[in-house]
Amino acid sequence: MVTRRTPLTEEQKKKMHSELRRDVAQRKASYRVKALGMFPHVCASCGRGFSGKRLKELTVHHKDHNHENNAPDGSNWELLCLYCHDHEHEKMLDSKYISGESSVKLEGSGLGNPFENL
Image (cartoon, rainbow, N blue to C red; front, side, top):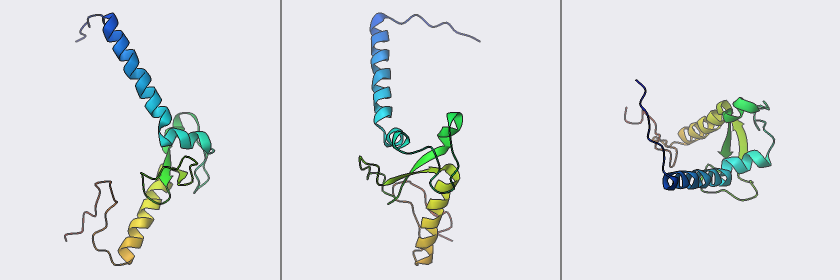
């Protein structure tokens, strides 16, 4: 069933446009947008190129695993495809496991080891 919406008032339109402009500005300032503007759209690990709709598969990896460390020159970032990014984090988990840490968690992600209490 389709319902009709009442037309927006001029004040509501102004508010909506203001919010949209703010959202666009925030997105432009994000480290992902900055990284995509700085680096070629190629995975730094496997070398695959990305463009168009597939660009969303290219992610920003923080080399030191600290998402708060966003240097303006991009020195802590590298562009990785979804698969290579996942592999980078798996390598980190493996190294922590091998070093003897029994409960491995990605700091700040809320993810943990589902087998840690077994």
